[in-house]
Length: 203
Image 1 (tube, one colour):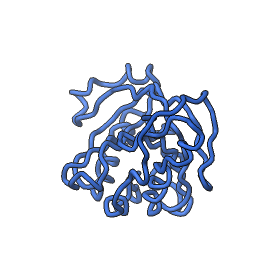
Image 2 (cartoon, helix red, strand yellow):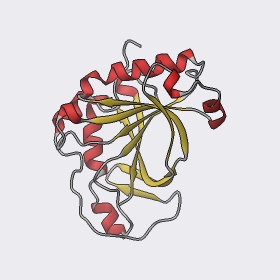
Image 3 (cartoon, one colour):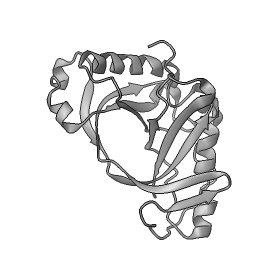
Image 4 (spheres, helix red, strand yellow):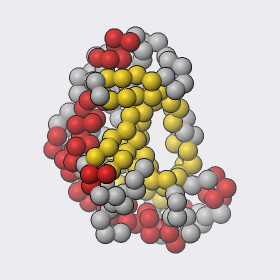
């Protein structure tokens, strides 16, 4: 799995506050698929999940996250589940506030529920994998396109709630968990072509 990258690059661990400029308060809940523009960024109000996944917890610095992904992909590949699957990351901690050694992140492979039933029990897998369902949860979705090294900037801009306040709609929660769907595949596209759908649950 040479070339795999974490959905949260090293830059994010150094970048400071993921939450950006967040103003607390409530707003109206928009209709499904409502689109909101904030500067050059587009947000769509969507329901994330329910999404059955095989997940593997990563604890510690994001610098070693590629190893966790490699272990998970090796496992799902051994089960015949890697081809065409959706890769999902769950970010639980903001590295601006949580020490690197305490960071938590789940590497996930989305699998149809029928596929999960055919898998060996987690205890028999040889890895501390979990079979679980993510969501459902209402989120604002925005897409990061470009270098992994600029993902932290995408988070900061996405969590600036000024546009949401101006429109009178509920804003994303500034605190994780956040959900990432890797549309281009981890390490499968040139760095400049990375495409990540970021799902930010509403406050």
